[in-house]
Length: 315
Image (tube, rainbow, N blue to C red; front, side, top):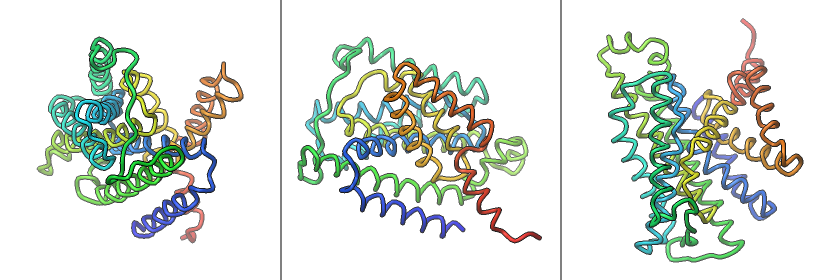
């Protein structure tokens, strides 16, 4: 089943990459942002399966974004591949250090502590003039192994780069879910004391999940910064974290693919809502979330699961 899912996912990513020249510019940009944000959601799904809901995941998203911006601004590093790797590494390192604290807490304490740490970063960025203060600063267009595209070519390059990073991340996370550490997520959520009796350190497993989720958040922030071309403290604000949680609820934690589908659906709905009803777009998003909770409590990813079960022969 896993091999089949990976094959379907690979075909979808190849098709998305192939149709890029036929997509309108606005949709190409929207999809690029949606898939960059989906990496953060993918990290949230890893934690969500364990019963942990962080409200401060924007911390790592912002760390990855500012890493890209500062490397380009201060050290003239412009290669997109180097910037993405360093953005993920820095965010992962922050998650590793914070994880020694966060891994000890559960439920609302975990959620609020992660939010507090994210807001601390927001306060630091707002008060630091050398980091752009409340306005932030622009990000120079990246290069690709010496190639410096501009305009439409840059949009295509970033789109294909985001797809490549998302495809690799999806394969690796799927493989992680099939490992013992990944499979123990649900048992930890249900009864972590029993898992401890098996000789497994729950805090250590959660710490690892935090680092993976933080690294994915850094990748998403790095790609988002290059796509938007600007960074500001709002990237670490609580509303940004709330948006990621919103998409996670919309997507569901049932599959890796749900993170990308949910993020794309969210961006499309939000864009349409802002265009049609600019004064009430939050109401539309709230209604979508309410309907999802009522009729698809396990998220959009459960649609595929229900369809697959309906095709199975009755026993």
